[in-house]
Length: 260
Image 1 (cartoon, rainbow, N blue to C red):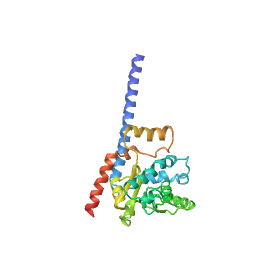
Image 2: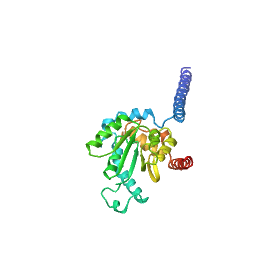
Image 3: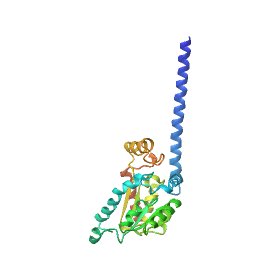
Image 4: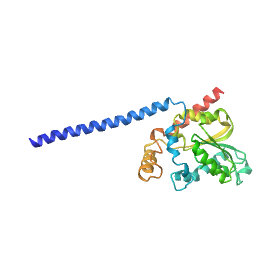
């Protein structure tokens, strides 16, 4: 009788545990769906949660061994990619290609520039750089750092959709590196970026692919295990696959020409 009662009690506990876990799982799903709904009806590309999250690192943007270490490391790939990309499109003159400042005479907009980790090396290559970020406190920090380095970079605080209203077809190239996975309305974001681009200009985008391996490496390993970047830096739901990104760009470009 004792063992029978124990089995019954165990069965009840097991069932209650399953119900609790199912409830928690459903709650997480509902939370995720609600976040999607809020992002869908958002009137801005800026996520206030992202602004708050990155504001805590204002003083650490230029610590090459701190929370922004991956971005510093990525410059070894990002800067040559942009330089060679502009060379391949014919934006660089033959003289400039061999010059220490190959980007001289070109205007580039660094969208989501943060503390200027990518803006500064591009400015050193001679580019006329404008850095844009929605986080005003980070922009202030970026401006001060560039001045100490003797670099003439124009920084602006605000969202790209507002910036685009007064800067249509102004830039030879747009750089949106490691930013689109942090914005809410990707279509509006990319459309605004393209509005700032001169005809036949170039746009450079780097981001994390939306795959299971990327989720494992960029979030589980990098944030939870190795702690290479602060926990909560990325949300898998905001990642995007390259083919979807390409389709959005093509749609935005078609609509841009149609509206024009």
